[in-house]
Length: 196
Image (cartoon, rainbow, N blue to C red; front, side, top):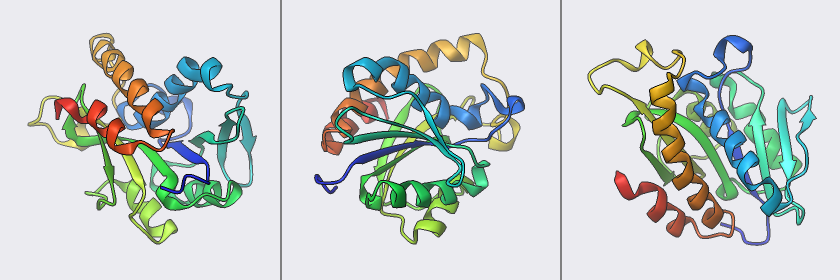
């Protein structure tokens, strides 16, 4: 990570009311939760829209943290990722993409760096557009039960019981994110990956 450049946290998913509160949009949902929980602590500005870049963004008061939300469809996530890094003059190594992950059980999460996409279309798009896989990913588990195919549940709405599991996970992710943005990804991984 480059300590002289801002940390970019990007939530990916699908736009539109029909995709709201679905598992495939957990990346965007969790970035919104980070914003609401840490807005005052980090001095985050209100969300602004970059129409050309197809994303929303909110900067911390010291401009060292940028929370961003893709407004593209999942399989086009690479375009806003590239536009965001260009706009804020940040390297890929300072990017954390927050995504759903059908290979991880619901209620768990994992921070990873430099991994292949494992078939995730949004990550594939980011790797293709950025020309590198060397960025960070916060993989939020959605698999429950393990025997089901991802295609059967990624676009389903999150139930009340499932939301309770995700709320517990959110506390851990917020704690880990606070380490990540101060250039401590290993500490963040120790907190978030502890149950994997």
